[in-house]
Length: 218
Image 1 (cartoon, one colour):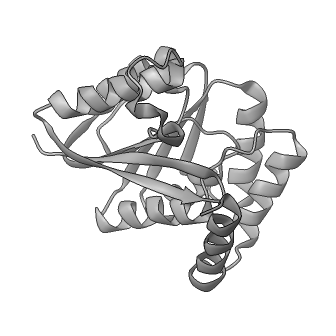
Image 2 (cartoon, rainbow, N blue to C red):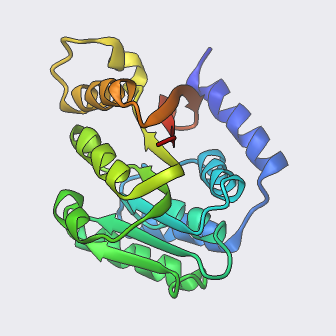
């Protein structure tokens, strides 16, 4: 099967199940116009994050890696009155674009975009959070997961994106820092008695990848 077919199937499900949304469409368009990399989650993944937050009754979300705020908008919309999102972004330009997109979506009052390397800003973040979405620099995934555990309580959900790396995650001798980061976080999750987790592979418009979903149990 080809990526062309994967993309066509993505388009079919998006057109059928995920109606066009002005704020989300504008966030992607603004990000592209500003020259941000085209690495935001797909509409399907954004909707999945939204559903996970709603199904878990989340009122507080921590996002590690904001980019242009596309996934942030999906998450913030799931929370309802009294909700809050703290999202961490290392790049000043990305943070500026994200703030504009989030404000345009009418969510500026509940989203706190914090500028700085996540590994440096996480010590000042106050939890607990009901859902954590990790989608930043992949070599630091294990450290981000450890912080996610510190900032959550039983019942919380932790999602780690982009762990499959087009299948390269199984290569123990890869030498690629992102692959090594994916392997470290996977092994960390497997050894952690406080979570129950699985991983899902995905194919689609963004190619072949996948994510870990973990439930904090104790």
